[in-house]
Image 1: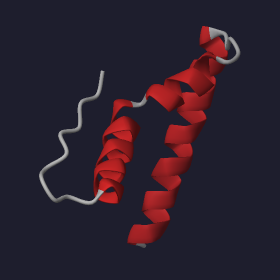
Image 2: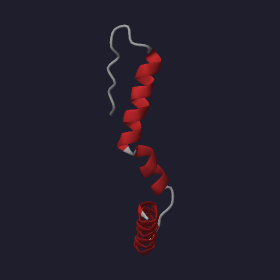
Image 3: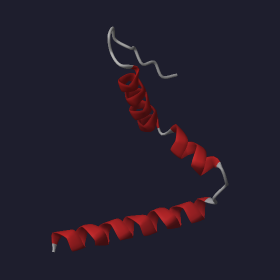
Image 4: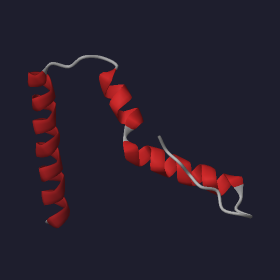
Length: 64
C-alpha cells in the first residue's frame, strides 16, 4: 500500500505526481500486463535472450 503524505500548503497536483512516480516504481502495472496471458518459460527465456542481444548490438553501435 502506497502512502503519500501531503505537506501543509502543498498543491494536490504535486502529491498526485509523487504518487504516480512511486506507483510506477513498484511495477504493479507491468506485472499485471505480464500476467494477462500465460507465456511458457521457454518462450520467456527466448524473448529475454533476443532482447539482450538487441541491447548488446545497440550499445555496440552507439560506442562505434
